Amino acid sequence: MEGIIESIVSGLGGVPAEIVVFIISLFPILELRGGLIAASLLNVDMWKAIPICIIGNILPIPFILLFIEKIFDLLKNTRFVKMINKLEEKAEKGAQKIMKHKRFGLLLFVGIPLPGTGAWTGSLVAALFHFKLKDACLAILGGLVLATVIMTFISYGIPYIVSMFV
Figure (cartoon, rainbow, N blue to C red):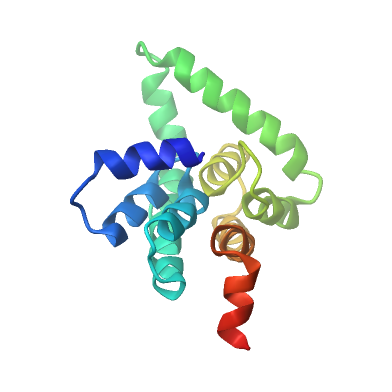
């Protein structure tokens, strides 16, 4: 992931670090996790980076929850049908893990930073499997909080974080 982030950072040369972090947080796959890694690589203050990454990662979520099924239906009759089928397959794989525990499963799926998990995929699963909007939003937000805590420790390092409070 760091290689992808470094490529994006170098491609956006001259753009303020905070904007780079925000843009990376918007991307599927990279999301908040990539944003926090980029923030630490760009020496963005942790307390500044956290809200930037959360806002960047949250911004697309309502659109996914509300409109993804309609978008998929429109795209199924186009040359993008293979891509849509792959995204639906990915959502189904994620759903098997999530559906056992519903909201808590969705929270963990979004919050634990593993490949193929995160707010984008969690929102896709929630939309395609008709979670109540309120339940999906609360679980995804909780997952983002969990991911933020985990990724902040990974990105900035435990000694750095502990030194801020001691």
